[in-house]
Image 1 (cartoon, rainbow, N blue to C red):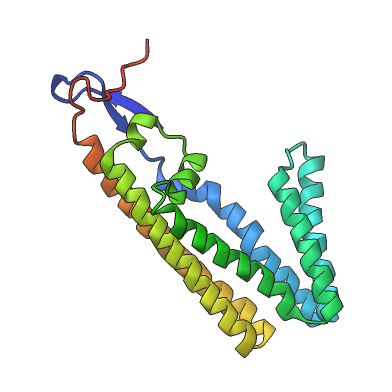
Image 2 (image 1 turned 45 degrees about the horizontal axis):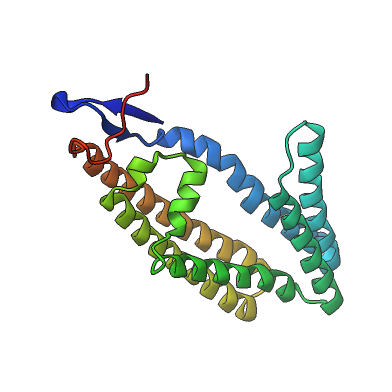
Length: 230
């Protein structure tokens, strides 16, 4: 959400407001349950009852069942979701061929490491990946994104998320090779969820502070002020 404000008679002072936290949580929670919690429950339940191959079949069925559910309800099925389904299928086939659950879980862990490196690389390039992800979720005006304080915030948050994903990778790899699959699924998922929630909290808190600073600083006349819409 954005609005135009005129503090102290300064026409065209651009103010950007973050959507309410409760609204963001209502939007994100179902996706977190569907994408993180439910697959772990499905895989572990099938693993206990049916063994590794049964768990792999259940995991693949869960993904394609989700795609079918969206399709029959008339919701769009994104190319990214189809690629994710293909990735799960390949992982399951390799894990079944090697009879190793470690192979199934190691592949996305290596993907997490690549994501960590992508966040890190975006900082010296001055194209912070955190900004790209944030603007995909909440559209923001260019005048706001060009503010020096905002650019600095997204650079720092990109470093934070690089560290979070790298820590996620270390935890996952250590547990994969030193603990049982059951311990890996529940403890690792819990640790990663807590770590991610902490990073999200820091990101939101930092962004609110950034907004407070930017919104409280009137734009100088002729210095990129955004005119009110006609």
